Structure formats: C-alpha cells, structure tokens
Length: 108
Image 1 (tube, one colour):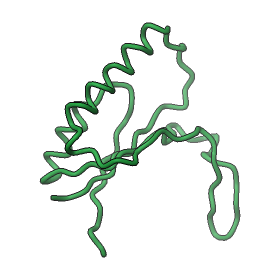
Image 2 (image 1 turned 30 degrees about the vertical axis):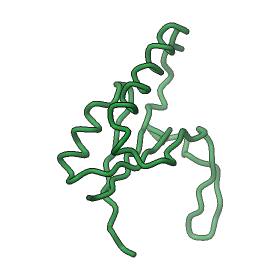
Image 3 (image 1 turned 60 degrees about the horizontal axis):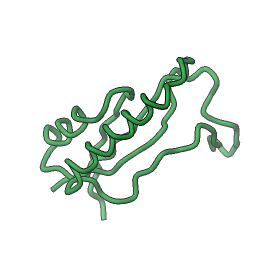
C-alpha cells in the first residue's frame, strides 16, 4: 500500500463569505467524506493558517507571497493501493479546493 499527500489549495481571490447554512452543509460533506474513507486517511492531517514564513537561501520572508494565485489551506495523508485509487478518493472530496496529489517516495 502506498502513501499519498493530498495538498488542498484555495484561490487567493476574494469571494463571498458563505452563509451559516452553507458552512454547515460543507462541514457535513467533509464529515461524510472522512467517514467514507476513514480506513484510507492517516491521522494527522489538518487545516493551516493562511500566513507563515518562507525560508529560502538563508533568508526568511513572510509567506505565502502576495502574488500567489493559490495558497495551501490544508493537507491529508492517504493510504491507497495505487495512484488511481488515491485519485478516486480525491475526486470524492467536497468541491471548493484544488487538490495536489503527491506519492511519498518510500525512503526509510
């Protein structure tokens, strides 16, 4: 069984704030997804704050960069038989995010 990192990205463009009802529906959709794929989801994924720091060439700057079109808002580690199985799990995620799927290299 392989491990995959799902990196959830969100647009930095402003959009209308969802209503409380829309937020509840979205949370319910994510809860349903997590229950359906609970055997594949490795504990430890979480949401991320929208700000942070970037270390590059020894220099620390605020990040993500202002000119970024998307920011990373969350991540999850998924176990699946292969890339196609991981992709099927990602396709079942509630809408609203771009999902980057990266397979772990398996070093260790």
